[in-house]
Length: 383
Image (cartoon, rainbow, N blue to C red; front, top):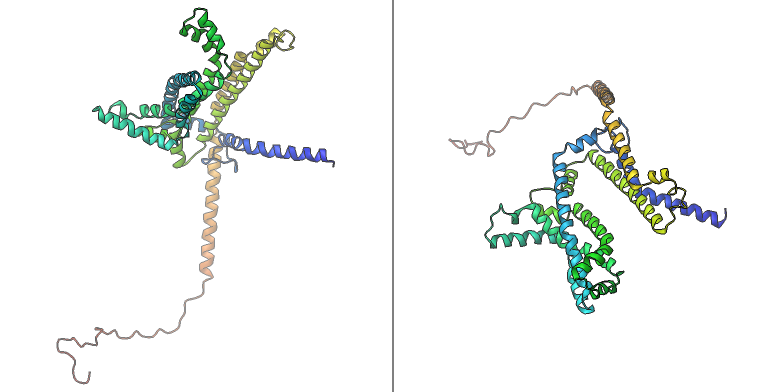
C-alpha cells in the first residue's frame, strides 16, 4: 500500500468517525422515537409505534410552553431587530474613538452570564414596580414581560452585529448622492439603504428568533411561575424522560431538513437567474424541470411527503404487538418466580438437622444486682 492510498484510508476513517460523532445521536433519537419501550433505547427492540408523537402533543405543559416561546420569540424579533439596526447605524455615523466606546457598551450584554441577566431583570423591574406603587398583579411582575425584557437586553446585540457586518460593504456615497439630488433622509433610507439591508434584516430576524426560542439561562429566572418550551423540557428531563422527547427531535429534524432543502433550491435558482445561465441550463431551460425545481414546488412536495408519512403512521396500530410483548414479560416473570421457588425448596431440604446437644439449665436469675443488700430487712448474718 503506497502513501497515497494509506492517506486516503486514514482520511476516510477520520471522516467516518467525525460524521458518526456528529449524526450518531440524532440517528439514535430518531430510532428510539418509534420503539414502544417506555425508556428511549434501540435494543432490545419491542414494537414499531407512533404513539409517542401523540404523547408529546398531549403534554399540556410542553404545548403551553411552546405557545409562550413562540409569542416571546416573535415579540423579541419585533423589538430587537429595530434596536440592533439603530445601534448599527449609530456606530456607522460616529468617529473612531466614540465608536469604540459605544461599541463596548452595546456589546457588553452578550458577555454577561445569562443567570446574572435573569436575576438583575427581576430585581430591576421589581424595584421599579414598587417605586411607582404597582401591585404584584401588574406587568412588572409578569413572567412573559420580564422574559421579553431580559432577552431583548442581549439579543439586540446579536442583531446589531449582523447589521454591522452588512454595513461594512455599503458605500455611503450612494446616500450622499441621493441627498444631493434632493431626497430627504427618510427617502434615502427607504430607497437606498433599506433595500441593501434586506438580507441582513432577514438574517437578524432569524437569528434573534432562534436565540430567544432556545434561551434557558435567562428565561428560567424571568419566567417566574410560568414556563417556556425550554424550561418545560428541562423540567421533564429532570423528572424522568421518555421517547416523546425523541419524537420531538424527529419533528425538529424534519422541519430543519425541509427548510434546508427549500433554502438550497432557492439559492441555486437565485444564482442561476443572477448569472443569466438559465437558458443554457438543462434543468432551468426546460419548463417542466424548471417548475419541478422551483422552491415552492419542492416545499409542497416535501410537505406532502411529510403529511403522507404522518397519516400512515397514525393508522398503524401496535396494540397486538404490545400485548404480545406484555404476555412474554409476564410469562418470563412467572418462570423466574417458579425457578426461585424451586431453589428455596431445595435449599430447605439440604439444610442440616437441628443440633440435639443437651442444653444446660439456665442459672437462677438474681433478683437484685446488689445481692439483696437493699431488702427491707437488709442482709442476715452469714449471707
